[in-house]
Length: 115
Image (cartoon, rainbow, N blue to C red; front, side):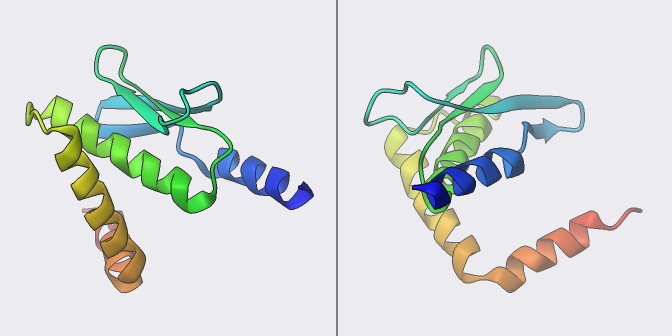
């Protein structure tokens, strides 16, 4: 039990407090308890907030955040994605990022360079 608590505290520290979708526009991100049992997160385009259920494992938390970021993109770009489409993109994108660490590293390297 002690390891779970330490893991959760670390996740809270590492979780971004915002996700930017334009240079000066962002959604706030927070971890909260009290969600319905089948709900791991929410994305509210009106309040510009993403909430992720606290207490999940690392992969589940990251997967839920990825899912809600896809909702953010759908809202902000007026894509009107269905929940099924968001779920499919979440699973596919999460798996690609998980299996291709060199790709993720390249993204950070190239996007991290200042022009």
